[in-house]
Amino acid sequence: MAGFPVAQQDHLLELLHQGLDQMGLSLNAHQCDALINYLALLVEWNQRMNLTGHDSLERMVSYHLLDSLSLIPYLKGKRIIDVGTGAGLPGIPLAIAVPDLSFCLLDSRQKRIQFVRHVCWQLDIESVKAVESRMESFSDQAGFDTIVARAVAEASSLMKDSRHLLVSDGQWALMKGSLPPEEQESIGQAHQVIRVSVPGIDHVRQIVVIPNSAP
Image (cartoon, one colour):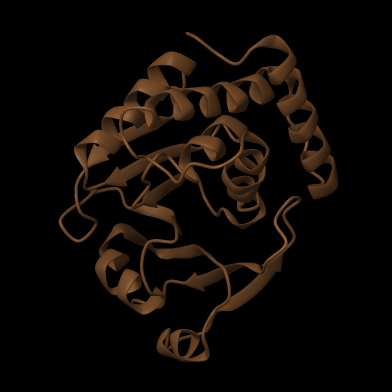
């Protein structure tokens, strides 16, 4: 697998380590290498298909890796589904960082799921199942403990379309920037809005944790 030149790889690894330290997270060398190799694959595939917005590599460490990893304290249970995963965010970084959990990465666009499967093959990630489907059409008999989503839809709409995927005591953990009052009000049930600090990101990042209230 082609990666970054050695000097660039070392620079990105240093930024990643600094960010992890500031966030109080600890990953081993293999996990950190895998995260940077994931970025290399993302850059490579972006040259022929628009998986994610082009940005500097330094910003990608913050906006793609560290931002995704900010969800770790808010994952509940062993079975996690990332709806509207796109280029595998936040699911791929989470699967690398927390390999003892089981992840389903769901997206309706074939090219994105092809990329996710390629990443899992290249990086030997065995805890991820990539599925091409819309969330409202997908079903899983066992159900999931946590639904995560990053910039997918307005909260109440996402809840409506994905509630059938949750176990009875499961939860949503939704990644948001600023949360408009009308969107928060539309959630219509008990929830927490947790502001998180992500190194390299200077605007508001929040995680909305919503317990499943279905009977």
